[in-house]
Length: 323
Image 1 (cartoon, rainbow, N blue to C red):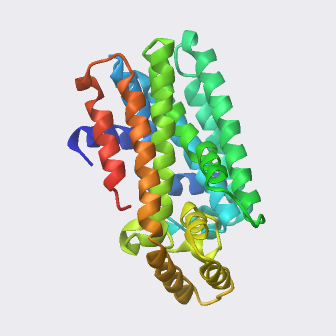
Image 2: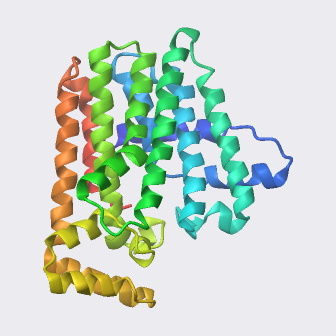
C-alpha cells in the first residue's frame, strides 16, 4: 500500500490496540482481543479518515467514527463466519472455530455496542446525522446478508440481483465510512452524496475482486480458504457469469461439479470450465466498470484534484490487490 495510506493504517492500528477490554468474563473478551489483533486491511476506517481529510478536517477528529466503522465491520465478520461455517479468517482460526458459536455470537454483539459507544464520542451537533446514516447502513448490511443466505437455496439468480446483494452486504458500509468523514468535516449535501456514491461503487468492485481472489489468489497470501465459495456451492458472480455464458452441455457440466465431494477436484474442474468460458476476464470487466463509476462520482466533488489523490491511489491499490 502507498506510504500515504500506510500512515492511516499505522494510526488506526495503534488506536485499535488501545481498546481497553475487561479481563472478565474471559470467554467474552478474549475472542475480541484475538480477533482485533488479526489485523486486516482496515480499508473502511481508513475511508472515514480520508473522507474528513478530503474536506480539510483533521483526520484525527474522525477517529471515533472510524473505530465505530471498524468495530461494526468486525462484528459482522464474526457473525458471517458462523453463518458461512468458515474455518479461517486472515489465515487464522475464526472465533467460532477457536471457541464456539455461542461465544462468537456474544463477543460479536459486544463489538456492535462498542461501535455505538464510539459514535457517541463525536460532537453533539453531528450525532443525529451520524446515527441516522449508521443505523440505515447496519440494517442494509443485515438485508444483504439475508439475501446472500436466501440465494443459497434459489436455483436461479440474475447478475443484477447479485450486484444488489453485494451492494447491501458490502458496499453500503464503504459509502457510510466515507460519509462519516464528510459529516464530521461538515461538507455540503451534494459532496456528501457524491462521496457516498464513490464509496458504494468501489465497494461493489471490492467485493467482485474478493469473489475472484477466493478462487484465484495465492493461498499463503489470501488468508482464507482458497476456493471456499466453490466448495460450498456459493453463487458468486463468477458462477452466475459462467451459467450466463455456457451452452446447455456446459451448464450440465457446471451443475455436475456441485455434486463433487473431493474439494481439490471440484476447484480444478471449476477453473477449467471458467477458463473455457473466459469467466474471469468477463467478471474483471464488470469490476472495472464499478471502479470507473466510483471515480466518476469522485470527480463530481468540489475539491481540488490534489485533495482527491489519496483516494485515487486507494482505488489503484484495490484494483491491483492480491489479498
